[in-house]
Length: 108
Image 1 (cartoon, rainbow, N blue to C red):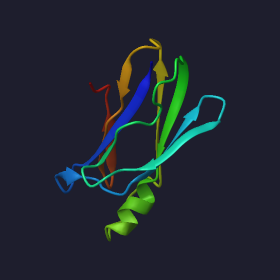
Image 2 (cartoon, rainbow, N blue to C red):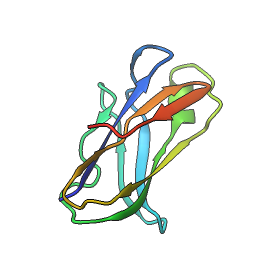
Image 3 (cartoon, one colour):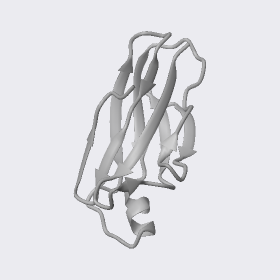
Image 4 (cartoon, one colour):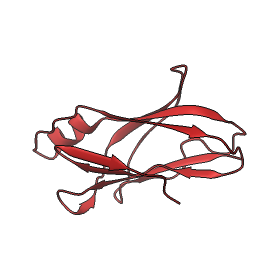
């Protein structure tokens, strides 16, 4: 069964980004999960044990995170779209974040 997880790292501070609110949506716009990163910047199970394929969006509330840390960021939110193609695999979608840049990759 597919599962989705994420990990947000604040590269400007060199530490996990704790307390980042995020939501997972299907490509049709249906919200299927909502969470907040833990002290280690992680959310372990956003889409646990569902045999699904298709396109999804992870939307991170990065503006609120930066405001909460006393900084200003350029991106009020970051949206990462990705495809689940194998219904039995785990999909880890990390976000590397700083106030004026971000990157992502398919993790393990």
